[in-house]
Length: 166
Image (cartoon, rainbow, N blue to C red; front, side, top):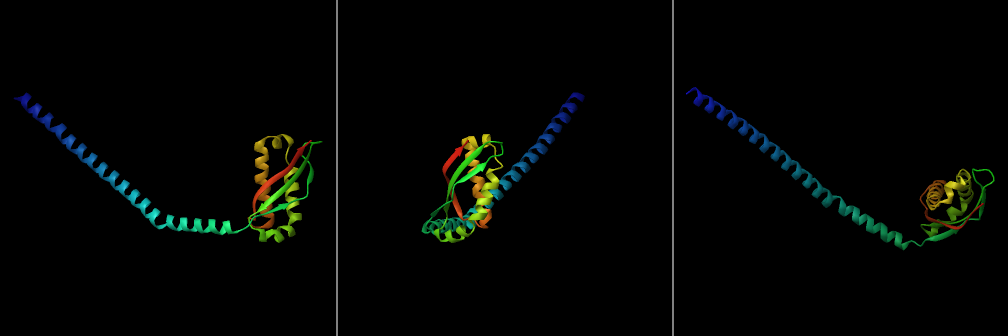
């Protein structure tokens, strides 16, 4: 009889624990489903309300940019000392302007642009400019500095027409 009571008592303990465990599992599942529904609803609301405006704005900007005629702006050649003693670089550039109507503004700012380029390139070493990655990095830095000299993003791209290092 004592054994029967022990068996009955032990049988009830796991059942109570399993009921508590099942309740916790159900609660976790409900919370997880609620989080997924909230995230999905947030994503849906974002795509419905914000992405349409962004897409319209982007398409309108593409149309506006396609109407603009780009222009090329050549600069006189640069012959510069590099950071290493006895190393020189002859560099000829052409800037591509976003809009041809900005060419008079760029013409006014050519001395500031040339100064920015001279300061930048003369601080570079021949090793850093010899690799293709170095040339791309220099191109990006020159575009950044030229746009800063103007005060607006006027330059679309930059082309090396001559790049000779000695």
